[in-house]
Length: 169
Ligand SMILES: Cc1cc2nc3c(=O)[nH]c(=O)nc-3n(C[C@H](O)[C@H](O)[C@H](O)COP(=O)(O)O)c2cc1C
Image 1: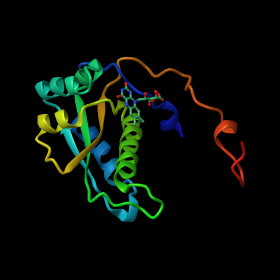
Image 2: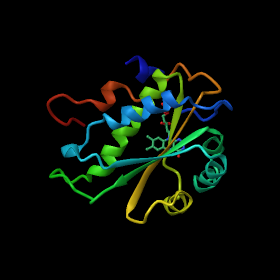
Image 3: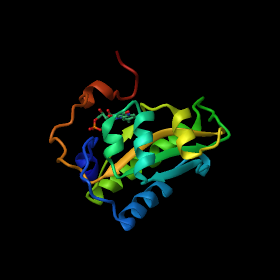
């Protein structure tokens, strides 16, 4: 709960590299995530090269923090598009869980992250030589935050999102 409360989307980073050990801990947090039938379809491309990060920033609609972060992780799926009985695709859910594991472990390591969904998949694939049949689900920026997170989180109240026993309007 402490890491959950302390996590926020970090959109400004220090010009300071992320230590390999910390990066490995964060990737390990992704590896240990749950997935439907333990399919583990997630794949991660860790990008630290400055030129590649600049190009990814452009593919992410010029969101400047994407180029500023010392690490960008392209969170991908090598998937057969399996759909669960509930009708939902497995891979976006499974990759998302792994991403949030990384975001929370990053907090533990004194680092910040931001999920990035505003990007052109075809462009990111081209930059990172990702094959056609692989999906790029999200990008995750990672680095030392330039500023602390705001104390307040703008969220709906529990009473607005939780119903007990039945759906109630
Ligand atoms: C799936 C997903 C995609 C997102 N894409 C972007 C993005 O492209 N750019 C951005 O600045 N923030 C992005 N965010 C961050 C959200 O805006 C942020 O999580 C939300 O406003 C709540 O703020 P907080 O993360 O600071 O608590 C994304 C978050 C999620 C979960």
